[in-house]
Image 1 (tube, helix red, strand yellow):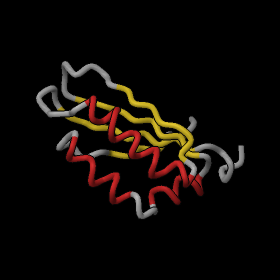
Image 2 (spheres, rainbow, N blue to C red; image 1 turned 135 degrees about the vertical axis):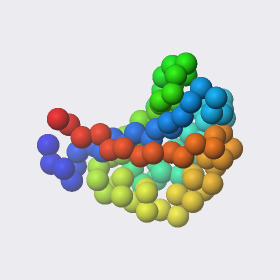
Image 3 (cartoon, one colour; image 1 turned 180 degrees about the vertical axis):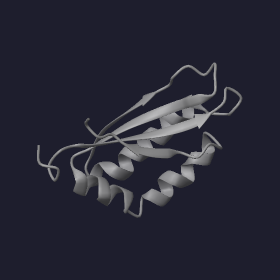
Image 4 (cartoon, rainbow, N blue to C red; image 1 turned 60 degrees about the horizontal axis):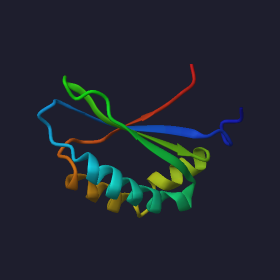
Length: 105
């Protein structure tokens, strides 16, 4: 598949311990709609939140973001809306989000 037209999948993860605060309700009901509103105009096609077990240290939350293509991904993360998305993070956690790009093996 052409890398210019292939969808780009980004995973935003939050790593921590069971004691780290993460407001799932705020994340799902407020933050994710903010992300959609901010980046759909640039080519964000979908996003989905996943919450692994919180009984041990590790991944607390994962958000899978699917962008139309490379240009859409680059436009979204270079957009003025990035500051509003990032400014919202402290409303649901003190953890720093980590971005990872999915690449086919």
